[in-house]
Length: 371
Image (cartoon, rainbow, N blue to C red):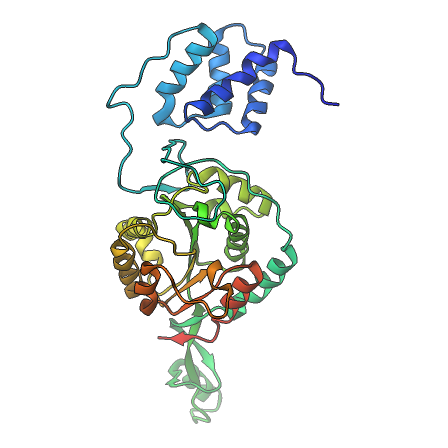
């Protein structure tokens, strides 16, 4: 039987709930940390409570003013001002988050609870990633990936028994050992190195059933090879590479879940890809890379933004593989206008309905060597 909450703690527990009602994210773990901070500090004034709340509930800087108003309302009995016309004006352009996350919550017209349909509305939230049961698949995949990645020729050369170039330095050294007689010509060949991987993961409502597993797969890829970049997209673009570099998967996924603010929301694939390409440093990640997009491709509205973005991405990348859960049927054909239009730009449009199938597809890309 769960013990009832002490009366003295109810006031503090109610405050995070008030924050969530007004669009400021506050996870259950943060509520627990807030209570522990109150107990540890033994606050002597309301300002001590405010500092504990700021340290543990961590509102985004843009929401600090609203946080203070709600704090005064809750603990001091202040009045909550009505928002004016300029207090909240969501940007139409897609937001970009780089490993820092954002607590700004822009509520769309409706939230997709089932994860079965795509919407363009933005509904942001913080999410706790669920534990997975395909750890053995990921472990075997991580071991096999380095040798299976597509490779490209590097600029350095190394000694080889047979090669297109003569290694003059080694040949002369060998001749000196034989009193100036050239016994054989040593050869060089170019080294090869794995191509970089760019992983773009759809976390919108229509991909709700695959989001957790796809982030776990990304964590495995990040730790299996060096040149990897991972971004999530829904109604905004978020770089999660740094969070996924943490060794422990549970810790990495927890940190990544805190960065991504648009879980299970709307779908704006074209806008997300254009935002990615608009940042020169991000666009450089795609140059010569194997781009893997994990998305159902259910773009809403005019597909021209997606077509333009995929065209520009294809010019930079070595190849683009689009893996969608909708392709589990062998007879699958793209049904959305957007996917039909971008299909000629894709190296493959394949099944992304399970972790095992995605792993098999990525491992099958090996052997692709281009200058």
